[in-house]
Amino acid sequence: MFGTYIYSLIMKATKNVKNRFVTRREAVLRQIAGIGPFIEGTLVRLPRKDCRHVAHRLTSKVQGKTRAVYVPLDRVKDVEAWTKEYKRLKKLVRAVTEASLGELRNHVRSRRASAAAPKSSVRPRPR
Image (cartoon, rainbow, N blue to C red; front, side):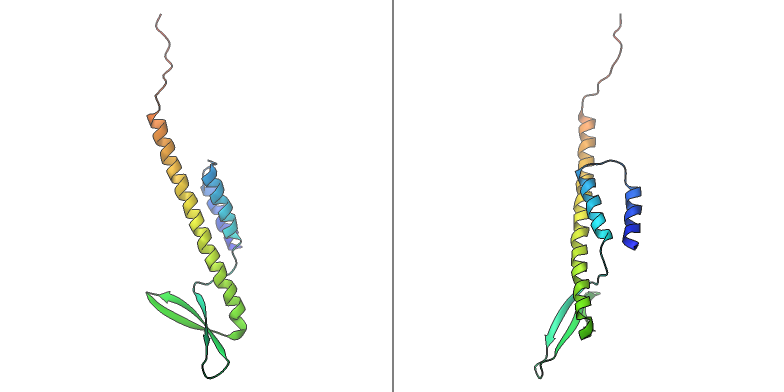
């Protein structure tokens, strides 16, 4: 699967530093690897006034304008599942971003703390 390949590449590129942020990010990346097909947009039901027929459209923004694509009745369930997967993917991407930002802030804090710590120099005493 393409997602597991990407996940393995990301894991090889990261350092072996394990803290809560790295652990959290790795857990979310494993979830992203299991994402199935997805599609960006919102599935809209359009009831017709003159009959009982309900049309379905997939709407999304393209260059700032809303575009709609007709969804055949036999594909509505599929498109519904794809849009839910996209929403789940967006949440997971936000979680990875939060964990990465936490790791970055933690790194800066630890570097500042080590720079501010008094330097202990072990020198032999003169006799």
